[in-house]
Structure formats: C-alpha cells, structure tokens
Length: 485
Image (cartoon, rainbow, N blue to C red; front, side, top):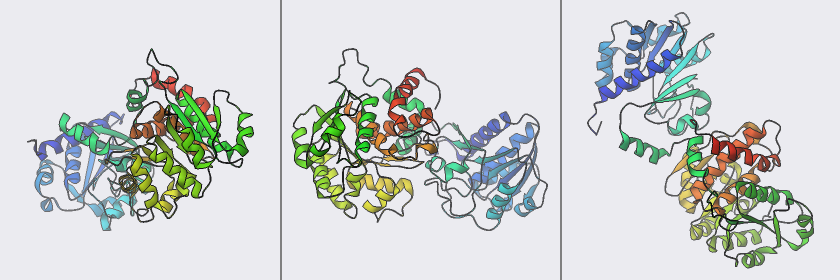
C-alpha cells in the first residue's frame, strides 16, 4: 500500500486467488459456508464468496458483525456481495456444508478466540463429512508469528496465504493445523518479496533452497581432500564413545575431506580398532591436547560435546575452541557443562563469532532460563543474539537462528529421527559443512535439512548408525532434482 497499490485492490487479488485454488480442488458444485470476521480477513471472505457464486457454487455467508459495522476495504467488499449475510450463530444450526472457508481472523490475531468466534471454529472442526476446510491466510486462532494456539483454532485442509508464508504456518502447533499451504502472489512486487524473504528467510527450508546452497560444494574440478576441509571431532572416555564416532561419520559422509577423532589415551585403542578406516584417530588428552591438535591450521572445523563429559575440562575445551577462531559446533555435553552459566558460554562464543549451538529444549532451558518461556522462534533468536552464535533449537520444528536476526524453520524431519544418537550425527553433519567452508548459518540450515532427508530415506525403524550411510543417496537426490520444494 505504501508503494501505491490500494488495499482494496490487494484484497480483491487475495480473494480471487483463494477462490481459484479452492475451485481447482472441487470437482463438482459444492455447498460452501464462508465465515467472515470483523476485519480485512472478513473482507477477503466477501470477495471469495462472490467469486465462488459466479463459478456455480452455492454459498452461505455468515458474519460475526453486521456489514454496517465493517470499515474501510472490508466494508466496500461487503457492499458488493449481493446475497444474504447471516449472523454467525446461525452457522451452529444450519445443515452441514461441503466446504467451510475460515475468513474470521488472519495473521494479526495474537489472543485466544472468544465468544461466537470460538464457538464457530469449534463447530467447524467437529462437523462430520466435510469435503474441505480452507483457511484464509492462516487458521483463525493460530498466532501467525509464533504458531502458538491459546484456545480454539481452525483445523484446515488447505491454507491459502498471501505474498509469503508466515512463521506460524511452520511452527508447531500451528503447522499441524495448517494442511496444504498455497502462496498467492497479490502483486506486491520484487522489492516487497525480497524484504519478506529477508525478514522470515522463507521461513521454511526447501529442497530447491538447499540445492542452490549445497549441491555444488566440494565439486570443484581441481579439488582434493584439503580443499574440502578437515573436521576435528572430540571424544570423551570409553563410556559413550559411540556418540563422537557417530558425529565423525556424519562429518565424513557430508563431504569433509578429512575427519580426525581426538580421543583420550585411555580410549585410544578402542577407537583405533573400529572403523571406518577413513576416520583418523589422534590422541587428545583434555584441553591441553585440544590446543596441541589445533596448532595444525588445516583443522578448520571442530565438533565438541557428544559424550565428552560435563566438568571444568569441558568448559576449558569450549573456551580454547572458541578462542582458536575455528568454526565450531557445540553440542550435548559442551552445552550441559554450562547449565546455569549461560553467560559464561555466551562470553566464549562471542569471542569466536563462528560457533553453532545445537540445544534441544531441555538444554536450552538450562542455559537460558530467562528465555525459556518466550515463543519458540523468539527464544532462538534471543539466544543467538546473546551468544553471537547460530542457534539450532532442535525439535520436530527445528529453528535455526542467527545473531543478525535471520531465522529458518525446518519441517522435513520424520518422527523416527527421535532416537538415541541422532543429534550426534546432526552435529557431525553441520561440522562437515563448516569444514567445507559454508558460513555457520548456511551450514546449520543445510545440516538440519540433510539430517531430516536422511531420516526420510532411512525410513521408519532407523537407528542413528543408519543416517551417515544414507547421506550419499540424499546428495544424489539433491543434485539430480530441481523440482519444487
């Protein structure tokens, strides 16, 4: 609108775009209930209703408020609707329609639905034999910025949003209520699109995005193992030795030219006697041993934390890693060692400027208790800014946040990735991408996506050991596929 496009025109494009997508999915004339709210989302509903009628569908329109109480563009669109406008309460009494269009509230709603709105949504969700439930922009009751749901929320089969996806479409629990997502271009122009992408960076990570960022790394014709980087993965004692090995295998399969496992003398023999043969093993006794290994500047990326131990030695190792200037993944014990001392971790990572932190919810809460109650995206961004580091807040809707305010949301992880050692492999994958020269934010986003794809390829029943071995198939699919999202 600031660029000179009227709100009325934008509303007309939005309503027509949604009607187009809905009609493509309806194979026969349908009985459609359109639920309109008191604002611009309701105005979209009037446009949608008008287009559906002209295409042969039977429309019954229900409104939370009389048309005379509407204002601005919404009122002008309501005045163009030639059919009756029924009070919202009648929807609770009328016959079950084939299709329900939710145009009650859009992305601007940040409170729980109340009164008639809550009753309408609950009734719409409970109705049997509905062919399709369609949300305008976002399901009413879902917070567009956070995905949070405070009370009732519309459960859509199809959500048609405008210009760009919103974080609430991809963050749980909103994601589970969104159904298929379609984005309609309403003509805001390339500059606005660039701003939207910069602000939300998607917000979802897609296959095409990852293909553009990842498919060409490590493919230079004159490349060799040293041009592909050297990742150092630190291991603790004999107990939990498998965690570091999983991380190291993840780094190898991601394409790091060399991977060294740094282990204590007491565990050296156990590691040397196990494969893969491509994995190098070097003695590394505590923080001093780490400092010695880092004298070789070719070791340009570091993974620290999986089963490393939770003590002062771990905290010292983290500080040495950060002071070295290496791109560093801090996972598991490297985070737990700073429980209740998040400021100490932030001081170390601020020195580095190239750290990636990979906490799950419990680790995050122990590190940043004052941020734990913020919405998921907000708390990841706040932690990233505090630590001057990229934060990967792990979960079914993993958030990757950068200290400069960029954020991505990953949605490709299958439920069966929730298994012991899966996070260790993820740390290694990110470390392998860092070794190949990707900036921390790109390495973190790429690593999370590759990890999710590996879970899909390995399939239900996977164990963490399977994930590194299916990464070559993930790479092949990425390189060979230019299809959408």
